[in-house]
Length: 287
Image (cartoon, rainbow, N blue to C red; front, side, top):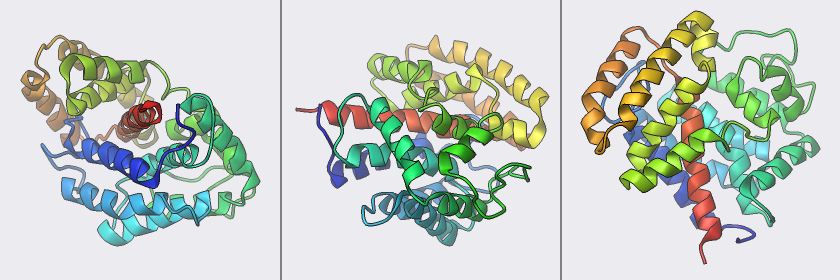
């Protein structure tokens, strides 16, 4: 396994993951098949274009890279299209940009530990405020609307019970290096399609636990209902020999969720991160 990847290889992996996020028919999200939530696929394409270079800036600290990427996105499209993806992609980028040994998850673990050594929390808090994700609200402990008073990891550990993205920082990406990643790999081998394997990964996340973005905005009951519906859709989807035949069923679920203004955004962020992991791992093991 390579000890690091070139900037070009990392950029290509990010581009693949972010572009497939737009192309894949993930019910409830914005994608090439249907707009939604006052956003279009073009907004996400533009966001990827301006944010990826910021994540790759080796002359900037981790927190500065995140804030730069969010600021570039906000300037380009005027809304939050990618905060969760950027938060989850950043440690992976750092993990493969610097010399390292062992599995990708082990390298990510080292990166997450090293964040405590940087004065990054202020930049992270400012980036989250700038993105203004739906349902953010205020908290009694380590509120991002106030000046940062703890490390990034401490803040993420405190937020992990209400935010699945924060949980990844607190758990060394435990949800990423788990069953949905296996679903992604299996479906890529079965269908020979990155796009449709990403849909399967997304539905897998949607059924494993309540989407924290939905829970923050609408409560656990609504999130549980979506999870139960997603479970039925996933079972049906995996039964197809040709995944494209499931498009009408997926679009029906998509329309239902968007009519109710429900966006399983966290499940989307996690699934795109799985795809990024898959792309990076393949490049690390290339001879």
